[in-house]
Image (spheres, rainbow, N blue to C red):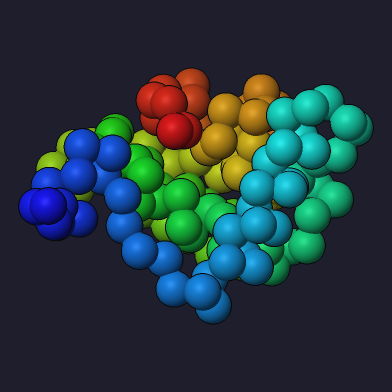
Length: 123
């Protein structure tokens, strides 16, 4: 039987260290609570978790529009292609994460271009 390399796998599977499992499960629970419209929001999640999720989400949009995500004193993150004119989107971390993940309207956010860029699917 031929062994399939991870790189040859059409599902693009990869190994995840066991130490990351609790964080991945927490992410799944929080996102599902929001998706199921239980009344739970990112504003109720741990602020440090929300900030980590914003930072982690930047890699998902590496090929998207150039955006500087500005959460004030909490931090800033660069998204997208560096060769494009950058748009700054500012607001509270929970509102930013809602917009980034497509789980928020963008209410409470401001954009240097006057409109929020389309980041594409969260997936």
